[in-house]
Amino acid sequence: MRILHIANSLHTGGAEKLLLETIPRLNQEKDMTVDLLLLCGDNQPFLSLIRSLNANRTFCLSKNRIYDPFFIFKILPYLKKYDIVHVHLFPSLYWAGIAKFLSFSKVKMVYTEHNTTNRRRKNIVFKYLDRLVYANFRKIITISPDVDKNIKIHLGAKNDSDKFILIPNGVNIKAIDNASPIPKSKISPILTDRSSVILQVSSFTPQKDQKTVIKALKLLPENYFCCLVGDGPTKDECRHLAKELDLGDRVIFLGIRTDINQLLKSVDFIVLSSHFEGLSLACIEGMASGKPFIASDVPGLGGIVKDAGLLFPDGDSQLLAETIMTLEQDMELNHTVVHNCQKRAMEYDIDAMVAKMIDLYNSISKK
Image (tube, rainbow, N blue to C red; front, side, top):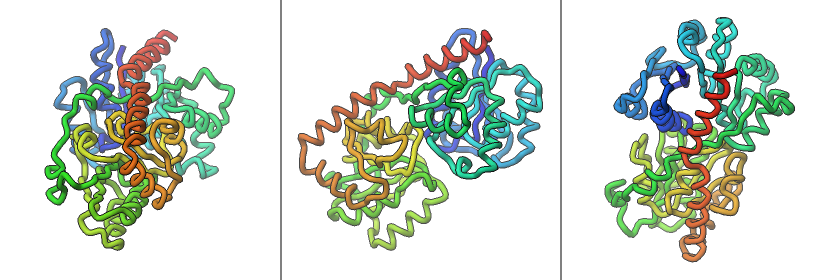
């Protein structure tokens, strides 16, 4: 069975990390060859990593862009070479879906819906365009109950249950368990063993909410620091906010990192502040880390974290700061949160996710 995954890029992000973890595992399956096609192939750490594994072929349509309608025609020849094409994220969704429509190819198309919402769903034109594009996909994978419910409503497909399949995202729990912590001074020279360190791992995009974490830091004692991992268009806004709040070096921008598991083991608190999620890998990794985990009570996070980690209202920096201080002072609660989070994270192991994907590929290849 020949399978091609299509994605925008391998810039650091949840969906991209999922590809990095799953494609090598899928290629270990007998009689299965899995390749990767990227719209943008600029040299990023994840792309270098997947190439270094020599586990698959990786093709790139450009060096620096994803919003190019001519990609539709560049994708067309690939549809003839594979039995299944599995697509991730917008605009890959549109370019591959339209290419399928134009090709009259018999290739089976699969799309993974990674988010509970997006800006297209608020636009009446895109609402109808989405329905036309999604019609070209044999199966739509949803990664959480919230994602499943919302995409069915958006597409007016509540009763079309055969088209949708719920496969929760998974993370490499074993790799997190086996990771060794880094001395805080090696994360940043301004940190010491006495520093209380808060970590958020996420891209800097309007969906994420690092600003609330920065505002919460202003309400915490001077020995508290915030490390922000990731990159993206809102990073400069966050830098400006930290400067405006006179936080100096207490907000540490770590950029793109490939040692996330080690960082998770090295800090005191892990936070994911966001306005909405699908099923966040950073959330599951944070819960698996053995550190207390705190998240925004928003779609895609609240349902996963509830009764395991701690939640705060979207954008409420005051309550986030209070929650961190409560965990600092109440070690019994701290240990309970850690235990419950690790137990919850075990439900999202990557090997279980890959097994379900293999079952899906096998089932649709026979139809």
